[in-house]
Structures are given as structure tokens and as C-alpha cells.
Image 1: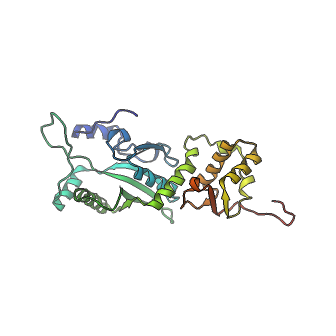
Image 2: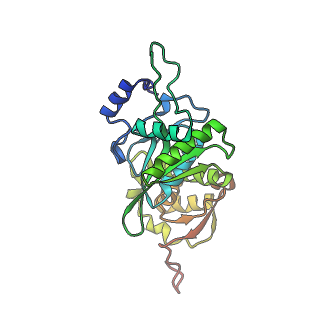
Image 3: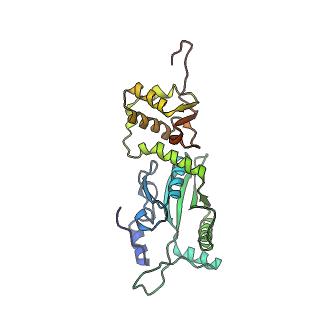
Amino acid sequence: MARGRRLKSYLDYENALGDGIGVGYGQSYQPWLRAQDVKSRGNRSIVFGLKTFRNHHLLSSVESNFFYLAEFNDSVIDIREQFPLFPLRLTQQIANHLHFQHPMVRGVRGVPVEVLNVMTTDFLLTLRTPEGGLRYKAIAVKHNESIPEREAQKLEIERMFWQLIDVEFQIYVGSELNNVVGKNICWATSVLRDGSEFYDKYPLDKILWKLKPDVYPIVGLRAMISSTFGVDAQEAMMLLQAMIGLKMINVDLSYPILETGLIKIISNDHYIGLNANGYY
């Protein structure tokens, strides 16, 4: 992992903004904080985004879980993690209004004055509305519902910041169900993240039109794919993952798929069934 970025002074902030850090959108966006920049109590990870075509820096397992859920949502068209709250003057004014201490940079040798720390929001989502417009949603990710007083103060500063610019703010708390769904999405989409589009060389309709909504053992689906395309079990499994990850079939993600060895297809627009002669 690359060396951490130093953001300890106002000059550092200016230089970072000048380098395009914390600004832009889509593929051009660079998060204010990267996985290597912070000490995290959770599992940090870097995940290539299927919608943004860039690496996302996720600072905990709960952030990773939320990322997979958000990315799999058809309405979400952009995800900007570790989004900085500028201008600093605004977060400072909000803190003063609330009579809270603004977060400060700590432990900097040789800095004679106190430096305001740049506050960040865990995720800023861009969503497409049913009418075709855009809206934004800011998300703060928390491990559990028990939030210490100081953390609650910072959340209130963050909430008011977004309220003042008319952006919806929401706190996401991890749950067992969302953890299961996120892990299933991670598994299904993992084969898509290298950008190879290996599945394009296979006429997957030959499989899809046979799959009526039902519960299937993974080993059976894998064997069907393997015999249809003459591929080994590993390639067959990857094709199955791609069909789920690309939403060619709509499957139940609410239970641990790999642990149970079962896939429940809820709907499949490609299914045509057998004709009167028993043929597809």
C-alpha cells in the first residue's frame, strides 16, 4: 500500500485541493482520505468500482458493506467516499452555533497555531430520480447505534452542513441482514472488477432461458454451465457469478449463498420454458 498523505496544515489543504483531491466526480474523483492515510479499527480495503471505474478507499468492513449495497442499487450512478466538507469556515460556524468544539489537527510538531481538521462524510451518493433528474444523499456509516457523545456532536455538525445546502443526510448502521447481502454482492461482482468482460464470449442465453424462478443447488447450476460451454468448474462458477452480478437473473441475497450452496432465483426475464414437444 502506498505511503500515507500528510494533511496537517492549511497549506497542505490548499495543495491537496490544487491537486484535485476531494473534488470532481466519477472516475476523476479522489477521496480526501485514502486507506493508507488513516488508522482504522476496521478492515480497510480498496475496491475497484464498476460504476466509477476507479479504486474506492473504504476504511472499515461496515463501509465496505455499505459500498456494495449502494453500488448494486440501480438508482446510484456515482459514489464519492471520504468526501471533504468545505469551506472550513462553514463547519466552524456550525460548530460555534451548536457550542461544540470543531475537530482539530492533533500531534503536529512545530505548528504554533491550532489547525481546524477537515471534516469528511463517509459517502456522497449521486442518484438518478425516476423523472431523470439527479439528487444527492450524504451517508455517515457507523458500526452500531451506540454513539459516544463527542461522535454525536460531530455527526450533528455534519448533518447541519448538508441540511444547509439541501442535501439529504442519513446515518447507516450495519446489520446482520445487510452484512449477508453485502457479502453476496461482493462474491457475485468480484469476477467483474478486473474489467476483462470474460463472459462476453459465451452465449449466456443458452443458460438463462432454462432457469425458471426456483431454488437451485450451486453444484447443479455449475454442472449445467460447464456441460453447455465445455468449461471447467471454476470458469462455470465465474459465469454464474457474472449472471448474478450483472443482474441477468434476480436472486435472493438475504441468506449466505455460498454457505448454503443454494441459489434462489426470484425472477428471470430471459426464461422461456419448454414448448409442447419438450424443447426450449
